[in-house]
Length: 312
Figure 1: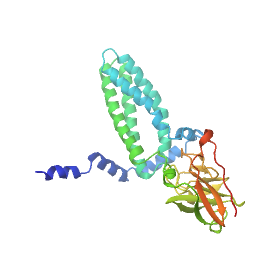
Figure 2: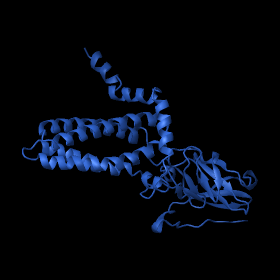
Figure 3: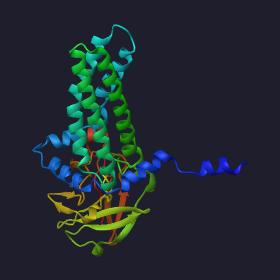
Figure 4: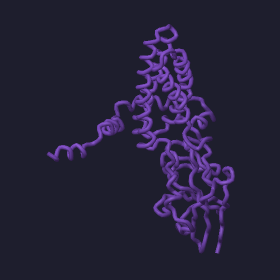
């Protein structure tokens, strides 16, 4: 009698199983490729980083979607009360007006995701655009005096929004889309100096990769002798910065093009919204040593510690 309940407890969650299938299904990949290329080709200029949320320090899309979601949820509450159809219709319109910029910010982020994330993100977008269509129909019905139909379409739209929100949560928390992939570095690297190799092991002008407490570190030696060191995994989606290109004192991630300043790890250009953890460097007895900077962005974002050069 007890075997059946135990067997049920061991079964995989059906929703997670479906999401796992969605992540692994390549059927929509040709569409994803075309759409991502189209989003990347949009002439947004510096507005692209604004939409990524680089100025905010994390993606701006989750913040922007609060307006349409909040408006539509409030409209649904008013629709349960008699005599509130006009106010509910106003809130539906506010949500529709806010949906377009929110969708644009989400699309700009989505265009720079891994394949598995992009598959989930596409369905997330489809659900949300279905919600926009349903709410647009709801508003049209309300304007024509078809209040009951407007309410019905509104509740259907809220259902679609809920599905889209569930997929958005999966993207953010299960697939780590938009998360800072370098956040753990200060928690893993021990305090103090760490020897990473002889100076001769770091050729001028060539990015090298070393490990400090199992954390990959990018080491770059300039022609003047200055040595820079950053956490090597890109904060955007953990791309290998040691395989990127270096120009004008910055390194560019080979995966999605984020640019970081070598001197302090500042994210000069997105899609990365967080800077790279930076290390002080010094030379002792012909060997390079590094020490993690733990207060780099204190005092209004200016580096609080200076690069150390010791020759003994």
